[in-house]
Image (tube, rainbow, N blue to C red; front, side, top):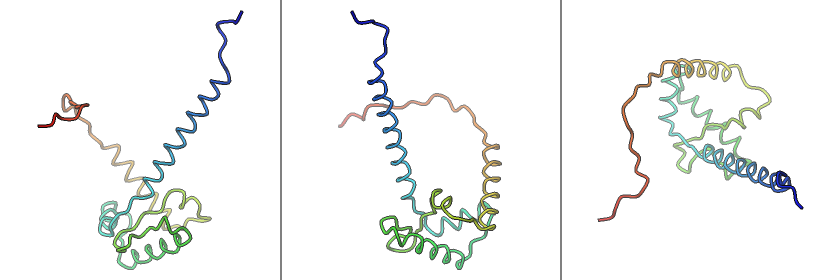
Amino acid sequence: MVPRNLIDIPSTLQLERLQQQEAQNRSNEYLNALNTVKLPEQTIRKLYSMTSVMATTGSDLQQTNEVHETTTAAAPRERSLTSSGSSMKAPSVREVLAEKTVDPKTVGWMANAMGELHQATESIDVEDVGDLIVTLSPPARK
């Protein structure tokens, strides 16, 4: 006679491992997607001017491009510049945290940007716009 109130531990552990693996896979896919984001130089300049943190001059942007080229030379599949050279990818969080030291200019920029982000999120005003209808089936073909 087999007791009915026992939990099958081996299958529970297997399910937990599968869930952890699935979460890790989703995390990796998300990080890969984020690491492929490339912004045009004009957009980067606009972002810097909007945050009023640091005015980017052409020479600063050129230095940034050179830094990205040298840091990604070891990993050619993760080039930060496109073939046209008109876009660049911001360094990932992992790349920034991997640095042994962060220069004071970057720390100041990050502190100011975080402060402005905090102020912006505090001033978000949400209002009810009514019902939202989402169609879950594709439209009928004509």
